[in-house]
Length: 129
Image 1: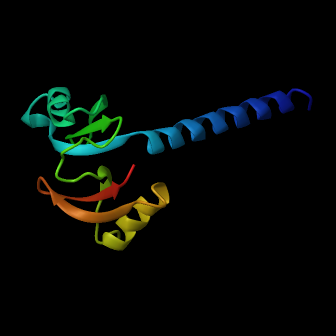
Image 2: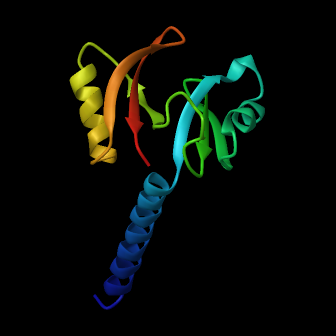
């Protein structure tokens, strides 16, 4: 039994650390879907789109769409809010469901809706940082 206490404590400590890192990422960055990855180099596209904001990372993992992570919303962009993909829209999960997914993550400022992006029906969450 004495061996179980340290294992439980370690598990709890790791769980708290992971939750904290996730919260910091949500509160401290701004993501934008800026185009298809097949249309060019995503990192270059993000640097061009940054317009003074610092690029923290790039990804093509969400349906091969170039998603940029900035330290803040890029100034001068037509949409000053941030956006992130939250999955596919289906007959079972459309606008209300998409909005709820978004509200679960971005409680105060999130709004989700299903959008036709590059011939895909995707749940996109728009939020303020």
